[in-house]
Image (cartoon, rainbow, N blue to C red; front, side):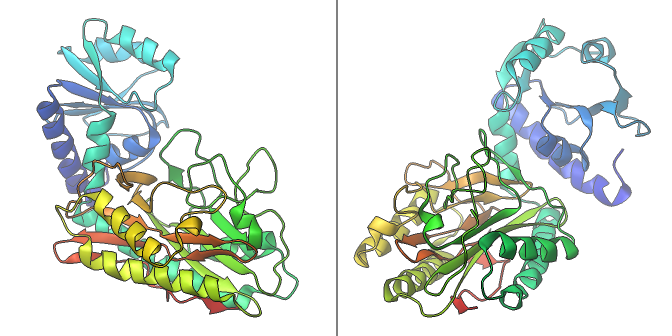
Length: 386
């Protein structure tokens, strides 16, 4: 099922997963979510990836037809898995953070003689450290993301609404090859390609755990642009995701119309300073919580804590892992237990909301290296006039 260019990469991933399975004391794992099916096979399919602690892998496929390979087994229903397996596991791990109760009950019956455990953490831990192949994918995405953002100033027209500008940005991203959808890890997390937030709409609380909210265009999807007309004195925050090859970069840049409030200028410059400080601090072995602490310390010194990561509603983090999904590990939050590792890829987003003006601050995607953070989204950080 795996094409030749991906085979060695998938072998590396399976080897890493199997080692973590063994370390956790499991015999095998059954992968069920689209993100992890893609991670373990190189494509999304309907079915399951079965991995043992000895690095044996079987792809149990329901759809599409026509996939081939010695380790591809077609099944109509999960009950056939037990019939095909020669050795039944004593201890099997499921993705319990994403399986529905009904699917979990059904799969538990398939492995009735096995002890079922939660392997979600194994997969998150494995995916948190990117391989050289994955890092290359992220860098490729960053280049295309940058190229699309370069067109933003010329997209603006006087009297535009936020949704009209967002449609133009979406169009440019799609023309650059964006796949459109981007996957988000987390309960009930929904958004379409990203956010354009103008003026006080950036201060509208959202039910979703994003750094910035926005009222949205309809109560069925209460996040993002809401039809605000872009007027002088407003900031325009563009936070659109880049997904050009299955791996996502996250980038926010801010623009304004007319003149810009002094406090907004100060807060945006502080965000840039935080980035530059954390680029030096973000090395392997550093607790993820320490990066949050530094950002908060700098914010308090500037007297801007009331506007940090929101105003009416504040987010409790300044960054997160990215890759196949947004909100991967590590999480940069005050109570995070994550420790930075070489090969982590994180999005840093220290942002501020200034009432009456809008949101300011930079988000960029970085690779954790032995020497600090290496940026892969290199569009200029400075706030720019439209």
